[in-house]
Image (cartoon, rainbow, N blue to C red):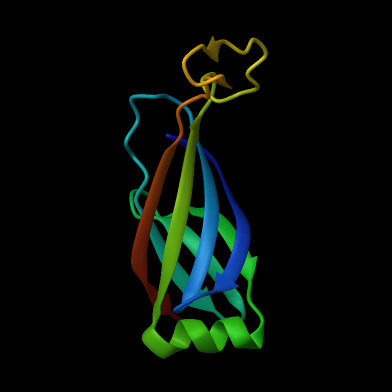
Amino acid sequence: MVEQVEVSRVGIRDGLSLDVTVQMADPDDWDFRPSLHFQHTTLSILSSTDGSTMAEVTLDQEQINAMMADRAATLRVKFAVTGMHGRLNIIHPIIADGKAKKLANANWKTTLPVHVA
């Protein structure tokens, strides 16, 4: 189950691009199926499972034009799991590299169609 969805950045690359952080409740949960809906100046990320609104962001005219050009947006998703991705207090160095171990993060990139109301 998705606990929290936060849009951290909205930009224009080849089209509209959204950087999204998704906080999951359980490491074995795979239920994140987003869909994008646009109305007036608000782009909403909705759950395809139950239709609930997970996040909303207001777009300016330049971002709206980039999105409407191909009626799609690219989501760059960074997943985190409650209890697994917190602050790493004890750093265990890798002797061979001289670097510290990092917590595993899952990243995901997809292009989704935008449904315009």
